[in-house]
Length: 365
Image 1 (cartoon, helix red, strand yellow):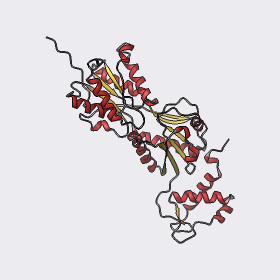
Image 2 (cartoon, one colour):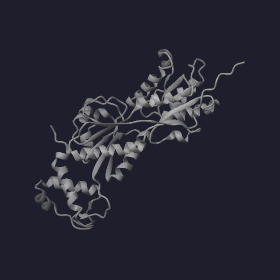
Image 3 (cartoon, rainbow, N blue to C red):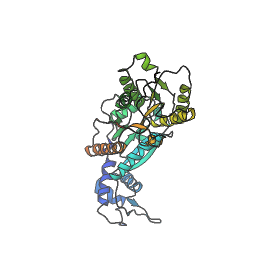
Image 4 (cartoon, rainbow, N blue to C red):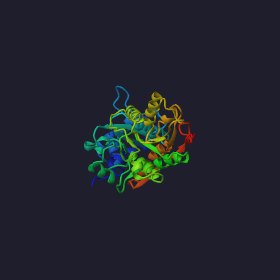
């Protein structure tokens, strides 16, 4: 069984060398590789790798024309280097989450390297992050393959899984309480008199979207029959690389103009990209939000719903807390030297703005 990162000679030598360099002044000469081999009782290759790690972190540098490393001028030395491993396709949601993690990490003196992959089936976490101290893995919407599951259960270095809900023992993860997201959205609409609430699946249906769907369905079944509830599921059929806003717009425009559409007076969008799509569809069709149709959405770090017209009522998670939790979890794992099972779920909160309103009573003669 391979050693975890903290037990490797490279990690221990790099950490000790970093501490020793802190005692030096800017532009002091770094001891030679031969001196460090003797001091740390290690191999020449281990010392060279440790010095390379500190050079990439900006702790030491080699002036042009010089053979010896010198101590760099710096104010803060990173405590650890974190590999953020994410899918190669563009995603505003992932970008927003990464921004919050990096902002929190910089406050904790962490540095980050960004690694990309195209297919989880051929992803080699150890090879992709061999120079970093820990990993944050952002999976795709596809099922996590067995070799990645194994790497998560018995990681070679501290590893945290992002957002996905997985039924695996001994893994570390930070997720949103997605089922509660769906319940919160429907509870708000029910409180305004809306019993027929459509759900727009405006992202690929992964474990997070499935959780919001489950929460929506659970709450809807308190008011309607199973058949009625299932008739109010609108799947925009989003695939990776699709323009989710455009496909959500097309799906909503189609159902709003369908003479055989189910009866609904409100819509829950599983993300704020769907909220943007429905806002455009309603505008083009002359449907007023919230006078004619109430709309609520979940929103992540980008909080796009705030900029819709009218401003969107949203279910939100504290994304600043998300960044803090990832970084604190990794630091704890590095300090304890052995990863241990830890899970953190962010609870959602309701932010009422101008896109939801009480259902008007039908006019009678």
